[in-house]
Length: 102
Image 1: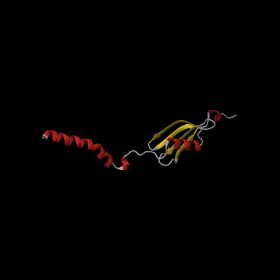
Image 2: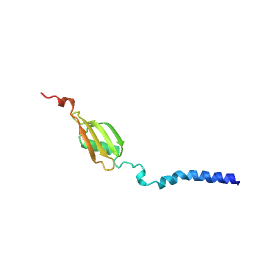
Image 3: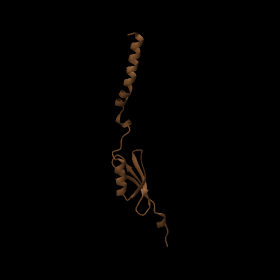
Image 4: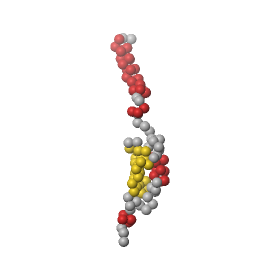
């Protein structure tokens, strides 16, 4: 083997091993955490809090953001902590029909 071939083999093997070593050396706090609460769990928790129709649900910044409606049509927004499902925010708007008073 020539010196050039040997050097190329060393560089190639180093580059191939590099991503694996970086992934293993990365601290746990820098890795994106997968939520402990699944989307189905988030839907169930929203339902337990009065939401009968989920219109939008997304995972953002470690929380499930859920938008939907209750049984009388009022809009509900619920934010759940993705690690344990705790409700961290809940807003309910009155339906348009409820705003009219005789």
